[in-house]
Amino acid sequence: MRLDIITCLPRLLESPFSDSILKRAQDKGLVTVKIHDLRPYSTNKHRTTDDYAFGGGAGMVMMIEPIDRCISALKAERTYDDIIYMSPDGELLSQSIANQLSLKQNLILLCGHYKGVDERVRQHLITREISIGDYVLSGGELAAAVVADSVIRLLPGVLNDETSALSDSFQDGMIAPPVYTRPAEYNGWKVPDVLLSGHQAKIEDWKQEQSLKRTKERRPGLTS
Ligand code: SAH
Image (cartoon, rainbow, N blue to C red; front, side):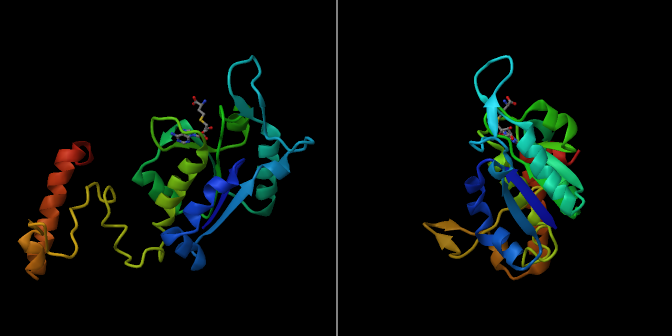
């Protein structure tokens, strides 16, 4: 998979991709992540990528031209399955959207900033809009990193234990059971006996029970 992320603040995206699972996925060649700074695509002399809003009002608006030039340059190189604008009013990100996106070859994620992008970008240049929740962030960079993380960890070979993503919450319409590690007792707080019993069938039953209980308590809608 290849992910091209377009932003006017590339530094905001450096760290999420340079550690842990997302870094390993790139090192293993399972995903290519390219961050594109919009600035070089600006044609004005100060290389700005935003301007005042027509009609007035507070906040700058990201201009269409640098975005169009950047997307066109990428599209000239390869075909994209989707060109996604990160937007608070887009489709709400879910595990099923992450699953869907993980099957794609090439994706562009466009990050807005300030008041957002010129509406004509949304009308003519992008194919899909995704939100990470009903709240407003300063920019699309953190949202794009969230989408990228949720998708990349699903790519075959990214997680060491292949079954690990499948046993996570939401994957099978269930919340994951609680997990424990050493020590078996801390401050008098004990790990459930069954997990130390070595009895695999009982452990599996316990996990299943806990998973159901959690799902009913926390996300009853998932089972309906
Ligand atoms: N004026 C816009 C908000 C702009 S926030 C409005 O009221 O809807 C600036 C940028 O941050 C957006 O262009 C978008 O790319 C990103 N952003 C903010 N909140 C987001 C969210 N919940 N999900 C995805 N992207 C978001």
